[in-house]
Length: 278
Length: 314
Image 1 (cartoon, rainbow over the protein chains, first blue to last red):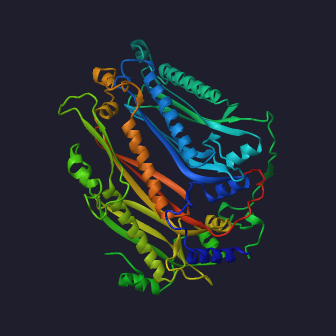
Image 2 (tube, rainbow over the protein chains, first blue to last red):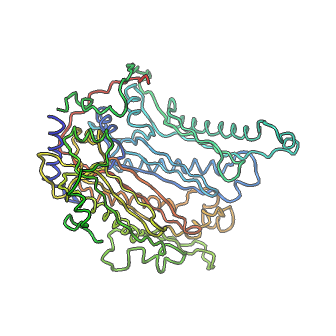
């Protein structure tokens, strides 16, 4: 059957066959996956179930950012609390939908003076050939990365996250005076960045260890100024904790290719089933 | 300009659609893909609707008793009232009265806002489909819909556009199908056994009018003081429950609205856009727009053979 036949078949189906009535036992599914990701997942024995989310705002009390230097414990704790609560909602939402895991999780982090908000959204997926669907993972990996990881024998477990918010100390009058008109490092800010980095990375690794992950992949970092004050430095690290159940990595032995075509001319239906478009 | 119907198009539109060369909003690559699939572009179809977008019902902390209730449900007993409207209330645990102390708080659904948005989006999309019908199209591919202020912040333009296509030797549907997809992605979708049915979008809006505790938490004044401690564990760092409930409700409502339109079909390529408007301290309006293409499975498909991992040397 050619693609043209299939298009006619699709149009005929939509024109002639009405969907099940609203309220029927058959439930529509939602997914933010692309068709490429959906096909790839199917080939690996998974299917999308529902679009799921989790969001949490935690308060940071007034005064936490003032009259101090070093880490702002309140902000770091608020981040940890919000991340844990949002992940819990995401998992519950996935389980309610009958999914076994959540893929392609988008992570949104908003930091303001008095609250930190974490927003997670992704597509719940389940195994196509399983009768029971027990919860297995949450991951910000794409479907493509997930399939590759799976092929190499690894399993995602969950989102590992850590954050730290640090207020850099002011320079002494002597330091300030000696640095005027100079191209010089500002050690107080560098040290604040290092302190925030160490704390955030350590927390993320600890979070991975808690879920019994062997490692954390695709770590994304967000660092820089956290507020209107130039002395407040934030460092946020998020990745997917992975585990090797069999204990040995399987080589995927990728084949090297040199594409000779332009991206705009890559339309090729043969890539799907090896059939000519006719 | 009221909705709609292919026979009620403006005269100029009818003339434009019946004379001259056909038009298309597709890229050259997508155009080539459509031809490959047997879809002949017949016209670049568009629909517009300009709506008045008033925020007056959402202003002021006291509007819960007036405009706020008007917002909740679009008026009591109104035929526009929807089933399952969301409303939650909170009460001050401190037990004293003050003009600065919020004794009550509420999260409620802004159904008038949702209905205005649905009307604007529906009109624009419906008018686009009407143009496609006038062209005798089978479907509209590559739909792009936008919403932005026109003239002033209270005047909002909804715009939907896409390329109407005809499929030779296919039955003529009473309503042309529509999809955000085009080109190779549409071809893959159909190859995979999914037929595009229509574009689907919905907006959910929840107003969060904070009570004293939420107000303190958002202002950061819940610092181990007597009213924080009296509220039972909300002093210092902690979850802002009322906001979390509002955020979750906005997403849940968006998903439910879309599900109502899906029946047993599938929402493919869903996108969720969240926005927030701070009306005052401790007073938020949270909106979520969920959209995607409604697709229907029309055949089983053979799963892809195992993909071969490659390293591109580019």
